[in-house]
Length: 265
Ligand SMILES: [Zn+2]
Ligand SMILES: [Zn+2]
Image 1 (cartoon, rainbow, N blue to C red):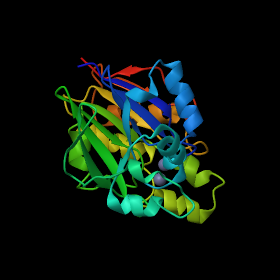
Image 2 (cartoon, rainbow, N blue to C red; image 1 turned 180 degrees about the vertical axis):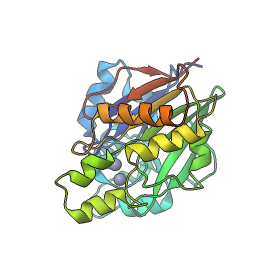
Image 3 (cartoon, helix red, strand yellow; image 1 turned 135 degrees about the horizontal axis):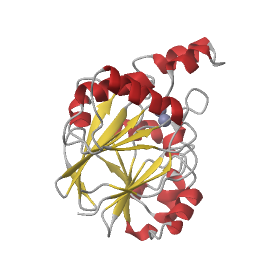
Image 4 (spheres, helix red, strand yellow; image 1 turned 90 degrees about the vertical axis):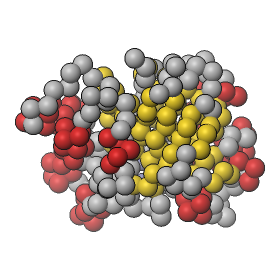
């Protein structure tokens, strides 16, 4: 099965990803305007009618900015846990009630030819989830906002053939940067974001032969650069004697859509 992945935007100014199987697809998060999402889908020749739904990871605005309009104007169903819906559905947000789909955690549901399972991650929102998506014998895991990789999330990340994982900040840039101390502490906490070395340590310690593609996501604008991410990757892997062995590595741009990343053999 052909699996196509695009990152429309990744980082604290907005997250939105597309995963398709040739005929149908889904979005993961809608953290940029609905206009930008529609424009980008048009540019890559994907009719919005072929999008079967949007999976939502949590209620932070960089993940739901375009959700209201996508549900109202495009009648796009949105899928997330009951607790996350509760945190999204404020009186100020007019989400079309026909589009609200509540999903259980750690139980498979079926959408657009994908078997999807949401799993909880640790982050400073009322609840945050990642997604483990199976199609055509391939497993895709997406985990973009998490302060550490807890025991519940780890198996989903380890099992992936295609992994989209956060590498949010360079530890030195954050410590020496201009953010106020409370914000630095929040970002570094177990409920904040993953630093480059945290992500790379986990990957180097747990890399499986079945993992073929790693997309490094949700880079901080002020506390990270793609070069720092790559340096951390190569240094950690070489220190631990782990080789990448031809695996595809992609660093997802903050504001510019990526080219298509093909998740297939
Ligand atoms: Zn975020
Ligand atoms: Zn967040």
